[in-house]
Amino acid sequence: QVQLVESGGGLVQPGGSLRLSCAVSGGYFKIYTMNWYRQGSGKQRELVASVSEGGSTNYADSVKDRFTISRDNATSTVYLQMNSLKPVDTAAYYCNAQIQRYSFVSAGAYWGRGTQVTVSS
Image (cartoon, one colour):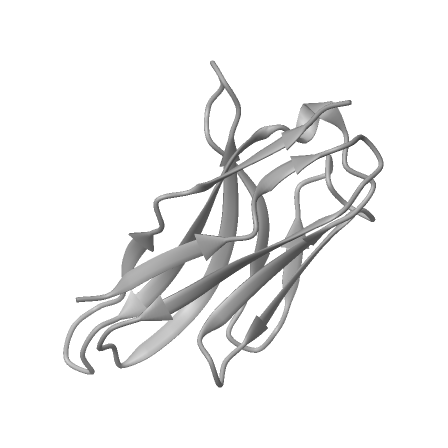
C-alpha cells in the first residue's frame, strides 16, 4: 500500500519560514511528478509547486521567489521550503505524487492527508 505522509506544518509568524516534508512509503515501481497543493478555509485546493522526476520545477505566481520545492529520489521524499510567509499562506498543505505501482500499469495520483500551516502574529 502506497502512503504519502507529510510533516513540518505548524504556527509561524509573518515573515517566518517553515519546511514541509512528504515521504512516500510502500511498494511502487516509479514516482513521477511530485506536487504540493494547499487549501485555505472556504477556498478551492490550488497547486503550489511541482517538481518533475528530473528536477524541473514550477510554482504558482503567488509563491514564486518565496517557496522552493525539491525532492530526494533516494529517499522518495519531496520538500517545500517556505520563506517570507504571509497570513494568506495559511492553509492545509497536501502532498501529491504520480506513482506507478507496477511496471505493467499506468501511474495514478496519490495524496497525503495534509499538514496545517498557520501564519499569524
